[in-house]
Length: 219
Image (cartoon, rainbow, N blue to C red; front, side, top):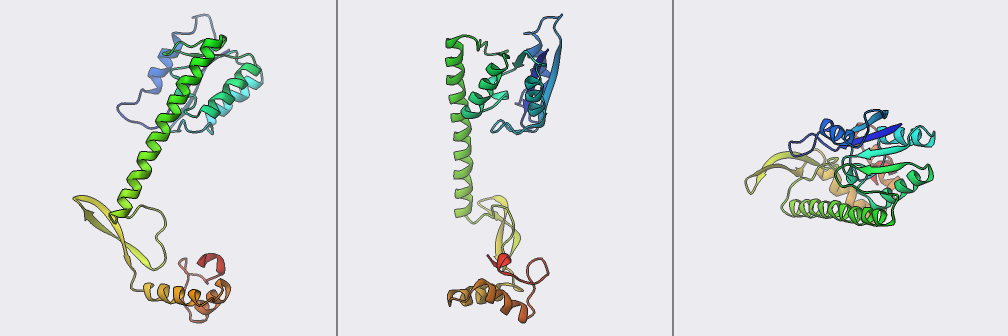
């Protein structure tokens, strides 16, 4: 049996649909050949932890699949290491691999070399995007934007506008901020986290979740 594998990270106008990917892949399959479609929608190509992909691999190991067809290489993975491991698995179980739009033959040395080169650039693209996101977060943080996540004790979040962009920022919580400063002063005087939590509990000050403090909640 032939496996058609499709993946789409997110729904967006410039992303090829699952249906279109399937149609491209079917061009590589004869009308008499049996095939099964495996689809992961909403999953990144940065790793291989995807339910449909894992099901396909189980079928490969069971000897049910002889060929895997994808729309493009990066539908399988954008990681060179992951992709290399996948190809090794395919070779181990004598499974052919075809990219319908890139026309690579994994049975030839040149085809394997070209696959590696393409995946290097795919990973380069992914890492470049990650760096841009990281730089953007750093820039937003320097400008005072709240970057998300759990609001730290002693602060609260309020809407704001920075350089015309709607966002949020952290401001001192009047009910907690003085306690936060006192906690910092006590800890700076070599008081252990365990003793500090006892002091807070003795004073009747509640932890963020409404319960008692302990050293783990403070750290």
